[in-house]
Length: 566
Image (cartoon, rainbow, N blue to C red; front, side, top):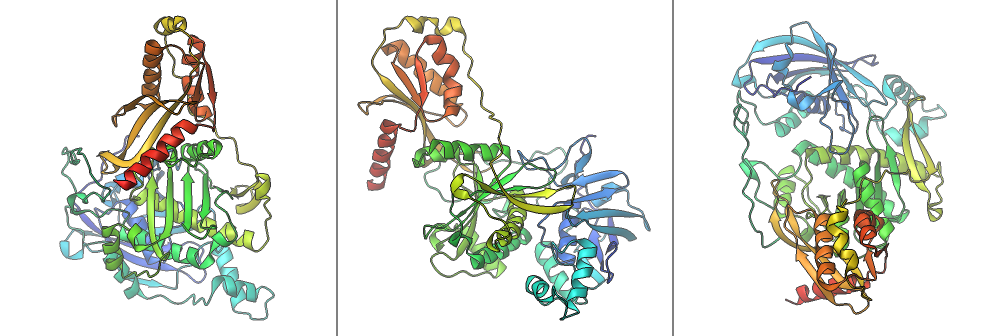
């Protein structure tokens, strides 16, 4: 089914009664929201109203149609044939009628089913555009408390100090008041997260008009790009506050005291590709957690791990991760400090400042976006769960024997299970660069030399351009080095739009055509070996991948040292 863009001009105001099915005591809220709210907006309003932490997947079902979050690239959140994207539909698009209802499911494990009843459909007015909680009863349930039955059982245990599980439950849940509900607190958060929504949203574009992108330009430093159209860099305030809260908990846990960055945790949630994460800081600095979401991201991690490379000009090409870091004030962008100030959050100390980054191959680590925040929020929530089991000794992992800690959802048992295991096989997505035999045949008859050539692609910290998203593009160089003498044989500065492996093959072709066939071509890993395999076989030269790329590594060190001096 084709997607439609949301209606930008609101026609109605909706008053919903939203209740958690099967809850005891009954938990419900009455919300007033404008018709140009997307279902994604309604999701966030429900999260605020029930004090959820947005740490799990969710979906809406209207009639027989299901709506879910837009999938991150490389992650299967839903099948487009079966579900529509919640960002593409406003409430006014759904033909909602008074006394009708639809559903919102939060956390596919605990299955918190919310019934949304349409109490009123009113003509739109700007005065009522601000989302508002009109009424409600009882506190929202605790996350990961086992659904309505698990939550009810937990409340019963907390009523009885003599219960055998009382102390353990109290320690996990804390002081719970199931009757507590303060509408004013909800409305303060709604007002902060959602600016008043007029009939035409600020920043909304009229149908048929493309959003404008900044022109590409050379950049001379690594300062953040100026936000476009008055929008802030990074995720929305609500998600950002959740991330800061989760990282405060991370700081309190200090998982780096028990985990090395080589100790891998793999999280397998239903309906999506796996995520691996690694805790940083065991060495006494650089604290944080790095997340590799989806097969393509994990593949770049495995590529970097296999190469064993500590050459920063190489690893910049492998980077494909999200991270939550603890560092100093100087590591935080200026506009991030302004947002912290707006949110009333303060940090002090050398390793106390929290910041979030996204890294893609060949790009400078930059701001995360809203979808990146969703991934980090859910991953951190799952990490806390599995780390608690690991710390308590409920699961034992022999990391020294290449075991990893796996946390997966068991569909049959409807529960999460932690266990030691092996890294699953990730399919290689690289393929040979095919060349026509007739084009390379003349190279077979070039004179044989004694050269051992290192063919490599290096990335340097200095950005040379910005992409359409405003992210700085790093300087990228293809280079041929004499492995034995450490000399530069040839090099080429790549343009942002050029394909690195193809241009490396062209560089090698031209060198052989002019100077003869080398004895050996050395590349950094098996991925590059696959890419150049067809070419080297057809001209009859040896191709090996080696961790001993000493000439290229020495060149990198000298270049970095020179750059620091000047």
